[in-house]
Image (tube, rainbow, N blue to C red):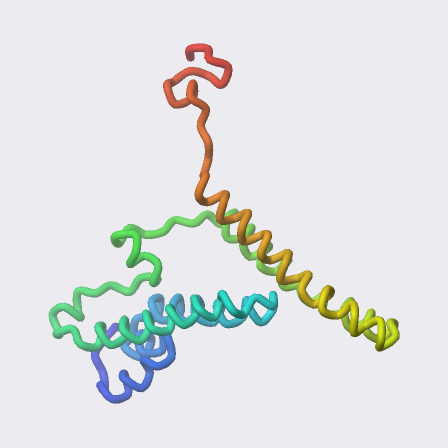
Length: 185
């Protein structure tokens, strides 16, 4: 499908759903990636009970998608023809394609599937325990039990954030060309 400008009114209506206007104009990679990021920000809080924070990210992505679609539709024909269909995150890497290995993709899909499975298991165990525990005791335990998944997810987010900030550490000798033990190579 070759990107082309279409009906401005319908493009405006599509711009209310992140990615829909981009797909309507023929930019499938842009549209699908933007829509995927938006729906991930809506799905993750539902599964992991961390709604407050991810919905804020979802709101920012919605506004980005709306104004991205409006700016794309407002370009003149020559400028529109020069825009290439790329994943939305490639706009932030100065047009350089993001190279992701299959091993990395498999790893992150595995992590997502694992988290979804843990959330589903927790929900099943929660329901099973609810059926087995008397109501008076459950009213005391429920506030504690219902916050465990959010607590675990918060710890994971903090660890990932610290890891991203610190990054890979190099020892002083490795940076100078020596080995880890201070010997010259």
